[in-house]
Amino acid sequence: MPDITQADEHWLALTRANDARWVEDIDPRVRATHQAVIAAQNQMKLVRKSFMPNPEIGVDAIDQGQYQSPWDTQVGVNLRVPLPSAVTNTPQESAARDRMAAATRQEIEARRAVRNEMAQVRAHLVAATGSLSNSRVEASSMLRRADGMERSWRVGETPLIEALRARMDAYRALLDLNRAEIAWHAAIIRMGIATGTIP
Image 1: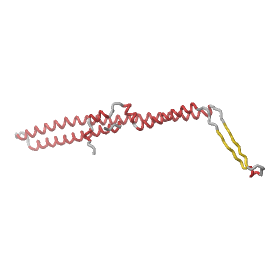
Image 2: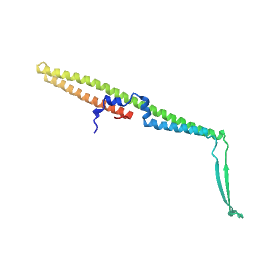
Image 3: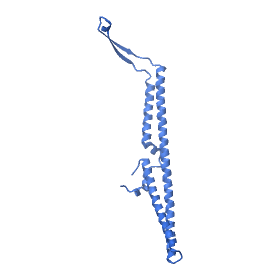
Image 4: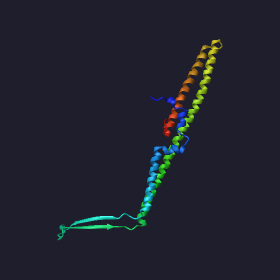
């Protein structure tokens, strides 16, 4: 079982989370949509360069015996070479343009989704860091307060119940600090997963 406390500032530095373009480019969704854009671009180039329609070759065979003909079978070869025209090219170019637009739109949407996810992960990390900082301050002040109340109880200035309440508050603050530390480590790990760089 991995130790979650190993995820710290050093880990965070290795994630390259500040390089937003790199994070987008390594995401598998963006890679797949970018490959679709490249394929659509190549298809568009192919359609533009191949304006000549494909020739068609056909073979016909007719059994003449069924028509009481003196010949048994007739075999013929058909060769059809259509001439290029806007009638045949325009639909192909239009379809290629539509595929290009769809692929580009999907890539933009994938990049937008990655940016949104990274913004959420960063916001979660910032919130976890702030919570950890506040919990540290609160825990240290509550521990000082509990120590002061205990000294006050020993000299008879404070009742025992107040000293115990202060100690319980200090333990609650320590528990909150531990939770904040775990949330902070988890946020760093989540950042590593989001960037695809887990050391």
